[in-house]
Every structure is written in structure tokens, then in C-alpha cells.
Amino acid sequence: MLTKAPKGTKDILPEASPKWRYVEEKFREVCRRYGLEEIRTPIFEHTELFQRGVGDTTDIVQKEMYIFEDHAGRSISLKPEGTAGVVRSYIENKIYAGTKPAKVYYETPCFRYERPQAGRLREFHQFGVEVFGASSMMADAEVITLAMDFLKSVGVGGLELRINSIGCPECRSNYRKALQDYLRPHFDELCEDCKGRFERNPMRIIDCKVPRCGEIAKDAPRMLDYLCEDCSSSFEELKSNLKASGVEFTVDPGIVRGLDYYTKTAFEIVTNTIGAQGTVCGGGRYDNLVEELDGPATPGIGFGLGIERLLIVMEATGAYLPDAEKTDVFIAFIGDAAKAEAQKLARKLRNEGLRVMLDVAERNVKGQFKYSDRVNSRFTATIGDDELASGCVSLKNMETGEQKLVSEVDIPSVVRG
Ligand code: ATP
Ligand code: MG
Image (cartoon, rainbow, N blue to C red):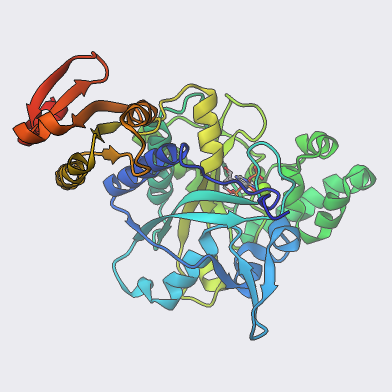
């Protein structure tokens, strides 16, 4: 127990950190280019925020949240997704009073009590983007293009953008009836979850991963055929804006976000490279969410992108991911005077920006050389009595094996080549 991490969680170990940092930097860079600024919100919020902001009828709120009571008896939940907290902050901090549209990005851990499997964890991480205050489909196209550009920048192949429209509460009520009429004769064949969804949230049945439910849903009426005039012309605009941005897409009527405050655009970015759990990114428009959370009516559009899933895809497809960083210079010392000199020199080189290692376990020189190999040094500097006297170090290029006496002040230029 004590030395086992909770089920569904994963340590990000030192050897994986450079890979995480790499995709994090790429994401920040793409967001910077699109003119977004970062927002950081708490890892826990009042449970009610998610009940209203994610939706009481969703699997997330019904079954998957980590809920606890704090010492003052408040119901608190770990965030299962990123949007609700950002919307709460948008309202609380009156960001709506500033420049519109407001465009933000974030990276956040998310917590969902799901059955752990490859690409499905109980603690996972998301990159996210939210844009508030633009009802034009130009915003949707820009948000989608950002996600595509990011995935391209980290070398993910086999990408497919799937878009759909889930309409607005108005057109959806007709659709809901039609969907229920279609599903009713199949009610007994639905899984237990979907039986519950039938009244509560029938659109979610379309999204069910149980094979039989999927077969039934295949021939169900499509939301696209029930769109009102406004939603229908928005969907056409979305397509033409995506075309203008040069982004390819397919229309997939199976993409749903069965909640009243999610509207119009719904999309997923899927890769065909890893089979199951191939959905790397999901998002859509939420024109009624800010109001639902007691803010001023403000349209919004955003996405969440699973980082663990992204890394699985990158690894499986051989996309570039950096290994542990090499050490620029390892400084070996022989004797106490040399040790003091090595410490002084190390600090100086570090202040100049080099990655420098010493053997702080103070092994003998043979042990130090072995350690130098283990930390992947590009150069090993050795200081003994002779070098001390001359103000030089013996500098070995670990790749070529070439070794020469180098004055301490010249080390950075030699190392930097
Ligand atoms: P799925 O259909 O795979 O369950 P979802 O619709 O629940 O996904 P969203 O809520 O849209 O997912 O979250 C956005 C992204 O976060 C997903 O596309 C996926 O990459 C990632 N994600 C969602 N749940 C998990 C999880 N339990 N573990 C790891 N990544 C996840
Ligand atoms: Mg899910």
C-alpha cells in the first residue's frame, strides 16, 4: 500500500520529464503565436461548479468525480476537466469587462474515477484553450486550427479532424424527441448506463462505447438533420472558415456533447495510429455556459487535449521526443586542493549556463570517471596537482576521446564548439 501509487495514477519520472517539457514548450509556443495568455486556476473547486458547469446528467458528475468534504463541511471536488474552473474565474474576475474576445490557455491535471487502461487514467493532464466573447465561427476555426498546428508541431501523424454540430437548446428539443422515438423499440437492448441516459440525456447514447449500443446508434436520426436555420448556417460557416484556414475535416454526426449549454460546434481530433483511445483532443462551443454559471451571457469555444494520450501516440509513431539532457562538463578531482578548485570552477561554469556535474559522493577518481559516463558527459575535465599548478584542466572530449590541456577560462568556448 504505502509504496504503491493509487490505482490509475502515474509518476512522471525524471527520465520522462524532458519529454513532458518538450510538448509543454511546443504548446506554449503555438498558443503564443495565436495571441493567447495562460490562466491557472485551482485544482479543486466547489462541487456545485461542476454539477452545473459539466452537468448533473453526465457520467463525469454522476460517477467519476473525486468529491470530499473539507474541514468546514464544504463539498469540494478535484477538477475533472478544465473548462468549468476557467469559466468560474472569467466571471469572478470580471474578465468579461476587458478586451473581447478573451483568449486563454492552460495545462492542468484532471481527476476522473474511471476504469484505468492504456490511455485512460484517474489522474491525467490536459492542455486546454478557451476563447470567450466571439460567436462567429471564425473563432471556432481558429481554435481548431491552433490544436491542429500544435499536433503538427510535435510531429503527430495520421490525424483526422471530425466536426459536428449539436445545435442549440431549441433545435435540440425536436431532435431529442426523434431520437427517443427511434431508440424506444431498442430500449431493452441498451446497456444499463444508456437505459438511464434515455430520459436524462439521450444524446449521450450515441457516444456509448458498448458495442451493441453503438450498433443501435448507427442508424439513429442525426442532429445535423434537425438544426434550426441559425445553427445550420453556422455549421456551413464553420466549414468555410476551416477551408479558408487550410484545415481538412470530415463531418461526423456521432460526436456529441449532450448538455444544454454546449451548442453548435463539437469536434474531435483522432489519430488512427494507436487503435483504441485514439481521441487526443475534444472540444466545442458553449454559448450558454457562462450564463448557466451566473455570468453575463457570453459565447465560448474551447478544447481539451490529453497529454498522456498525446505522448502515447508520439511514442507509438516514432515522433521526436528528447532523451535525458547530456552533461556539458563533468569535473573530476584528485585530492583536497583539486576538490576546492573543482567546486569553484563548477560554479563559474554553471553561472555561464553550462550543465556541470561533480561527484558529490566523493568517490575515487576511477569512480568519478565511471559516474561521468553514466551522466552522459560531453567533456570530462580532470583536476590534479599538475593542473592546479598550471591553472589548466585536462579536458577530454568523450565522443572523440581526444584529450588536451585547456586553460579554465577557455572551457566554455571549447565546450560550445
Ligand atoms: P473519451 O471519449 O476517450 O472518454 P472524453 O470525451 O471523456 O474522452 P474529454 O472530456 O473531451 O474526453 O477530454 C479531452 C481529452 O482528455 C480526451 O480527448 C483525452 O485525450 C483526454 N482524456 C479524457 N479522459 C481521460 C482519462 N481518463 N485518461 C487520460 N486522458 C483522458
Ligand atoms: Mg470519457
